Amino acid sequence: MTNKKIVLITTGQPSVNPRVVKEADALQAAGFDVTVLYSFFIQWAKEKDDVLLKNVAWSFKMIGGGQTQNKNTYLFTRLRCKLNNILSKYAGNKFLIAEKAQARAYNELLHAAKKIKADWYIGHNLGALAIAAKAAKHNTAKAGFDFEDYYRGEGHDEKTIERIVFLENKYIPSLSYYSTASDFITRETKLSHPHFNIPVITLLNCFPLTQQPNFKEKNINDNTLNLFWFSQTIGLNRGLEILIKALKVINNSSIHLTLAGRCNTDFTDYLKLNYAEILSNIHFAGIIPPNDLPTFASQFDVGMALEINEPFNRDICLTNKVFTYLLAGNAIILSNTSMQHAFNNEHKIGVSFAVGDVNELVEKINFYLNKENLSQQKKCNYDLAKNIFNWENESKKLLAIIH
Image (tube, rainbow, N blue to C red; front, side, top):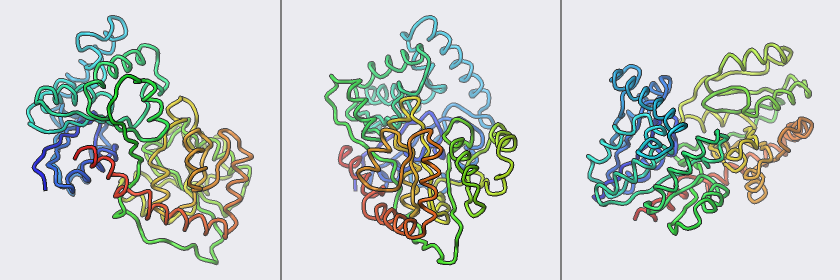
């Protein structure tokens, strides 16, 4: 056991940031005293937070108010953030303008972090980078940061990219390490910061084996093919359009698609207007709590990893979808983004199609109508997660850095 204290800081909420939760769980289980400081982002996630946080071993505190809690603080910090975003575009990024534009509750999170005397301060989300670095300096401690995404490659406008580059260049030199969520994000961040000689680790979005359900063999008499996709939001421009087109081309009533997440009306209107004939085979599951996703996914045959290759970050990321599907024992159909293509080439987790190619996607869906193809891939993926791609293995890299 250790009495070392670690503060994790995020400008979002725990229920929509599995990496924060998994890091907190791993560090607490390793004997560290962990506190998570976070700020409110959206009300539906607050309800999920209330359920999630009842069962965690670490400490936590929401900072900066919310829609129903410390509302005056929330409204004030929103206004301050908007004003600093305007200032950032017209007056530049100095004088803490960039920091306050990037994080709604910047002042409040920094104050809370400084008050906790810790050995490590680890930021998640770009708005938490400056907070972690400043709190560490204030308490003569170490700072780390997690690049879940390649922030300057997320398709922002020129002024926002200038702010991102400014913040990274200002605070990354004071870190003791940073982590990323894919090998290609690691490559790009190293290229962006060639002079910073600090440890860099790739922490894949794996999940703990405690969440792995029992393997489900497909019934020999079951002739359906059940596809599954999930995200926080079900909407357009997320890769779903090509899947819907492919299902219309196939026009097979035995193929079903289940979508989990918060569905917006633009998407349902899009379906009703263009794909009424296959609506009965598309099912909406609502929002599934993160810890329940692998078990929920295990009832389906094929997980759909439909990343698009624009903006650049989407081309080089490796999302939690892939690792959820592996843990659940799903076969996987992947779009051929750079990172997914490389990962699939190395580990053979499924079949892939060229981004935007409906006919090739049709071919891959039909491939899994063959029960032998499906059964072999499902078992292979389940074993990959059980033996390799799980958080118990992946978190060892983080623990080695912290120790």
